[in-house]
Length: 213
Image 1 (cartoon, rainbow, N blue to C red):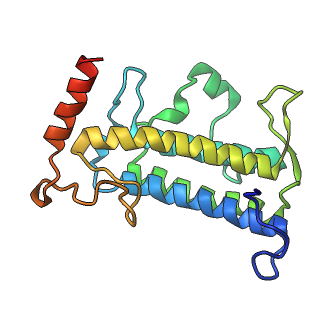
Image 2 (image 1 turned 120 degrees about the vertical axis):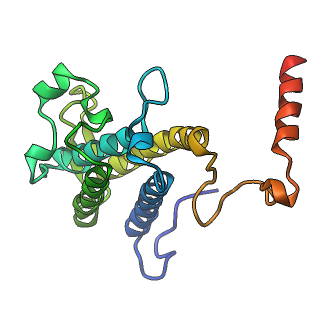
């Protein structure tokens, strides 16, 4: 069984265009879900390190802006038009985590706005190149640096969704907010305590199973 669209399966859309549409939709959905996960949190909560290695919510967004600029921009000969908004190799060498936190002069609003502007830039590459268009990732080893647009789309989607999973856990630990996205929480239908789902009892069951293992 093939999980890829057949030629002309989607009206008159060729197979490559149909696949590009599928990948682009997945990418944008994940972008939107990341932004939703950061809603209604304070500047302090967005910046606060949540793990021993400093993982923080605003840092994920800042990191993903550079990921998309690199893989959809530099890789295909399209440098970001405002280099002052990115990092030089020297800056990243002196601080390898520079793209993982907001500085004193940055705000959550400015970083979120930057990410949205990067979407437009990245989508221009996606829209104007075929899936088999060739690029070169500057920071990859030479034997792996030659890539296609399709490879980069899959690579960025995997990168983004992996971080989104981390964000899910961190957000729940901050204020208890859970859910896949605003349209589909993907939680037990009656997950609210007032409607009958007992999370305390559920956790107690899991603890008992773990302790008895």
